[in-house]
Length: 394
Image (cartoon, rainbow, N blue to C red):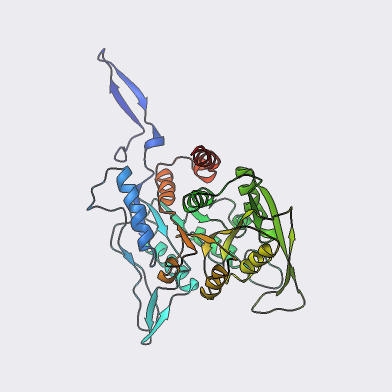
């Protein structure tokens, strides 16, 4: 269907006459599908490519991934090079701005790529497309500068500026996962911005990894580590029919340490948690200090097992403290996705479970390329209820 260049076709009827019939555009690709993998996204891009080829019966030796790279000069300056025509492409750029394993040479020194470096390379790839692509979609799982989403003092609005810059360069859609504050899409109200949740995949991984968990109000509870994460926790609580608790952070607003107001204490609001399995839900684990502190306080209150759901596991201060808390029985499992870089040391941890999102991304790409609605993919309530019902029946 992608080769059809007209809006109507003529169908020869049995009586020999001609009748005009409309094409079913719901099955017509918007353009030639192309995946562009930024540095550090090669693994997840190959998995997405695998599913797309299976669904479209594409031979194994072919690929939707088109070659693109950003070579650097000795000074660290770079350019983007596409080794494929851009004309007519429906291009999907996969970008992980938080992959610190990617390096480059600058004045003979090996330098790890920062989020700023990844973002600059993304703009270079968009510029290399040169306005010839039919449509450009950026899939940026963890939103660049997503934590700088609002102004609390005389400071920059980095996330909003980045979104506006991408749109001004010709990007039509931006797909991100579990945005720190999805209201940042107000910066580009007339352009595509989809905030996707990993709730279904998280619950599926939990049921597979912890086969004896009982998802009912008497045995399990959802806990939000702060007031800002209540929205996603309310979703889990409503879909699973579980009780909800919340911690709020009491901060010292008269002091700034490492760019933020230090937390003086965590206070819990909720019903009795004695003996219950608890699921802590947050969008990211940065240092993990707050999450581990909360886990320890919940254990003091008599909590049973503690499972942590976090879309993005950054672990910026290493894994030693998590090892210590696991050894002491203060945490049981941590679930994060493969949407951002996962070092080998993390994957080897006994307390860690990786949630693979590549098939979900492939579904989003497949649906968007056919110009169909992704509403059912953005709200997986029916799929969650189905998998929980199947689990309980067993």
